[in-house]
Length: 235
Image (cartoon, rainbow, N blue to C red; front, side):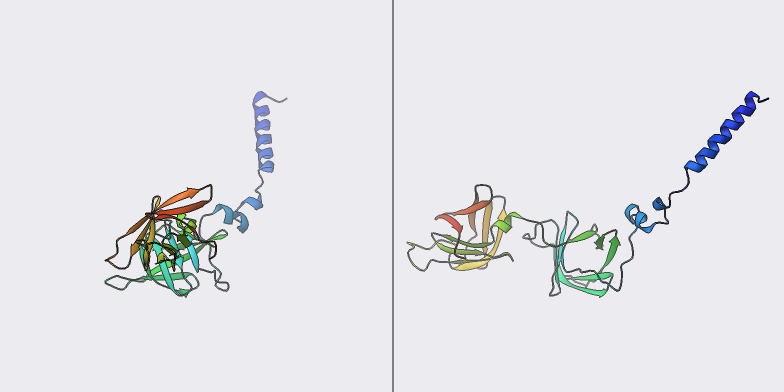
């Protein structure tokens, strides 16, 4: 005859047995499956030395920007706008498949910063000392300056804004009553809020300010003291 105590013992044993059968480990969700661990483990994976990953191009962590040029030059920005003045410039090299070295210019004592390449899942991170890890991108993030690069034509002639931050202003060949202040010289250009600043190389020529005015949803025009400058459609 079963007592109340023995009934409880049987029920408890049954629960344990069912739990054991129902909790059999799923090998698809354990460390035995490297694919599963790659998605759930943040530990960097080893790079394949037989297949070096490309490093030339643009790198960013969402706050800083870096470019490694094909000619061995590098530029590092404190922000995300490549048209701003770089925080650091110099030379870069790749002594091993997993290391990039940055040698900045302008230091009293020559520096060589060793930056590790790490594989994390499907991404490759560049770890620069003192900077959050960066990921590689095919192109630089867009900026308002992208809309200004090119040749502009106005009352005073042609204004060429180059992608390297340089400009060249040329007076018109004929038909202008007088040349504008920016004609016939070159220098650096930059955008400050809604203004285009032309900073001449010559200290005898003052900085020229042009307003950047929107036209519709996707175009802009430049307004100087002598009138409006529009993108030159013939270039």
